[in-house]
Length: 235
Ligand code: ATP
View 1 (cartoon, rainbow, N blue to C red):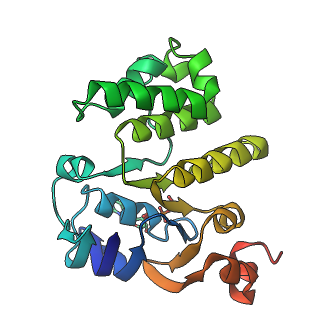
View 2 (cartoon, rainbow, N blue to C red):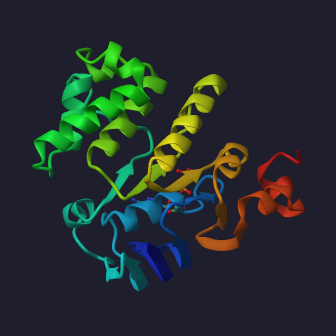
């Protein structure tokens, strides 16, 4: 579904990604794990059209999308939940969800997806008229995910959904990630919480200072000495 081949991405003269290659197949949850500053967000921003690779290829459903405008990429079915959630604080929960569907015209489909979001996140239904800025961190994460679902993505890009959340909320968010995937959405999940990410993903890539250093089956990586020492606190 998504094939990234040898991309280099720069911020001015600073190189943030070096010959990064990865693949996501339809139906999978693939995770990209790595420490602070490794280049995870940079990769997602490149996939969603906010940054342009200097070199390399990005193919999505057989078409090249490297350097394409962000709006066109959303239209083609890729939707991103940014790091730090970024909901529209002064708008209500429901208005935020509506905005997620702004490129769609299928009113019945939009209504069905809104119901589905409220089924996945009953907490949002209880708070649908509340302004988004007054939601808790976990609720804002739910809203950011709900808004991305409203775009009806084929491929959902999640940037550190566990960041700053209490352990119980992290578990809730991850079980919803699994549910969204089981209902047919392919997911690329970027995480520092390697333990949780490797437990929901089928395959994983490890990125260090802009380079993919390891990749493979998530369960196998979870058991590898290298990953355990560096990312799982020696567990
Ligand atoms: P974190 O988990 O801390 O969000 P990350 O893996 O997502 O980290 P990125 O945000 O992709 O890391 O950053 C990769 C590198 O690019 C870092 O060295 C960072 O300082 C640099 N970088 C990110 N954004 C910019 C920018 N706008 N201008 C210059 N350098 C940047």
